[in-house]
Image: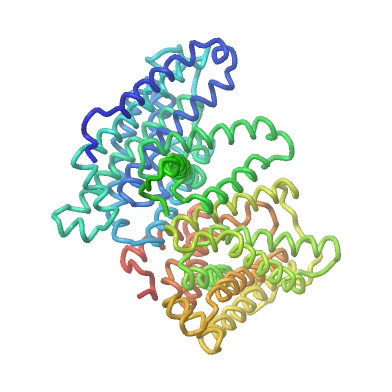
Amino acid sequence: MDRKRFSGKDAAWLVFLLLLALIPLTPVMAENSFHMHVLILILLFASMAQAWNIIGGYCGQVSFGHSVFFGIGAYGAGMAVVTYGGTPWPGILTGMVLAAAVAVAISYPCFKLSGHYFAIATFAIVEIFYRSFLVWDWVGGALGLDYPLLDEGLKNLMWHESKAGYYYGALVLFLISFGLVRWIEGHRFGYYMRAVREGQETAESLGVNSTAVKLTAMALSAAMAALCGSFFVQYNLRVDPPMVMSLDMAMKFVLVTILGGAGTLAGPLLGAAVLIPLQEYTRAFWGGLGGGVDLIIFGLLIIFMVVKQPSGIVGIIDDIRKRILRKKAAGKGEVVDGAP
Amino acid sequence: MENFVQVLIDGMLSGMIYALVAAGLCLIWGVMDVINFAHGEYLMIAMYVSYWLGFLAGVDPVISMIASGVFIFILGALTYKLIIHYTIGKPPLAALLATFGLAMFLKNICLNRFSPNFLILSDTWLGGKTFQLGGLIIPAPQLAAGILSLLVVGLVYLLINSTRFGWAVQATAMDREAAELMGINTERIYILIFGIGGACVGIAGGIMPSYLAVHPEVGSLFGLIAFICVAMGGFGSIPGAFIAGILVGVVEAIAGFYIAPVFKYIAVFGLYLAVVFLRPRGLFGW
């Protein structure tokens, strides 16, 4: 399969992006800011999941530690604005570089661990960062950082009148993350990553430096996660450790990707497009009633999805497509691959 | 010096409870190579069972821990039958995510039904009582929990190492297909192991309302610490998990007393990283 050329699929993606760009202009969306909010979150979480997908999906290293990088990005932007009273942009850049550096520093020893030992090590790292940030006064401690009200616009990366500005911000984020992964897919590095995922020893025997590949993938993934984090904090206009650095946040990176389909370009978007509306609308609908109902449904859905189709929504779509093909072929009396 | 011994004793006592919680997880991990993410939530539910028995029927946690153990045994067996069974043979992540979903489900059911408030059982047999030993103070509920932990972990260890059932479990853990060819019903072994693993944490959770408040979030931290203990002890090694549990308890107490209370869990998670970076398969792993 040649992934390098500009294919019909890419054209479809571009048309899809164009349609997304037109959404805020429709009157239904412009009037209802809650729908806009859900759309922004879908784009944000799709980008976060895509960031995780680089290391978790394509490179096969299942990290439960991405909220650390997300949090570093969030604090980068937050401190640039709140602590130093400037614009968020230098903070965003610093956050991305710092997240990549931290990712390399902590991943290097962790990559020696296998299977569950690696997974639990990433849990431990999240907890260490989370608890340290809770008591670290310089970054605001448990109280977190509250944004002052500044002029809206690109300079301060905040908008008050309508959510359209944030929507286009999220769309740019989406474009960067999906563009990056699409580019990597066809690039030599993408093949290296998949080779390492399928069999590290085999890849090494063919001359792939698996440690370098994994570290590079982790650094890229962490920098993307940090970028998403800084957008998240600009959108919420406040940041505290439970919001951005908790284990729950780290699990969201994994869940959205796995439910959508890990190691595929469309997976993170599909996962976010199903999970985020479910989360937001159930919360809006039941949130006030005793609490927890949205998460009860969420939990059941996760169990159901994992048990029924571990390759995610992409897998379900594949199944349906195969069934249709098989029906067509059966009509003509042919046999299609994949048929039993 | 006296302070240090006191801190050491407190740490060992809480470490024994960690060990009991971890032993159940360790059993499941060792036999099925599954991380049960809902393990902490099992503990939380066991505590609720014990609390409500105490609150509504006046049963003391020392007795109702048997009921908690049985309850979580059934819950564990059901978890296997309804969820884990379908993830065997799929990527290892599948079981972890499914049990994460289960954890979310159980936690929020309790939040929804019992509210997020801290529930405290008063007037228990052990609650608030202490022993004086020279200058040292030993709290009775923690001591009882520690002894219980020693007892249960010892029993589980004997069960696995010196009964016919235990040998069948070991055979299943080594090679499921070969065990089946030898006439072992591995499906039943899996159900029972999930049940027994649950019963361990159920008993631990049953006695804990004597000295700890119950709320829906109580299990999360215990679950996380149980992961740490099991991985630190080494894949499927029950003595390893036990020693790691006590080590974690002691480190937690020392860091909490000599550095600052907020640092105690940072020290615990740091200890785990230090151990696995030096020995990537844990203290007793192979």
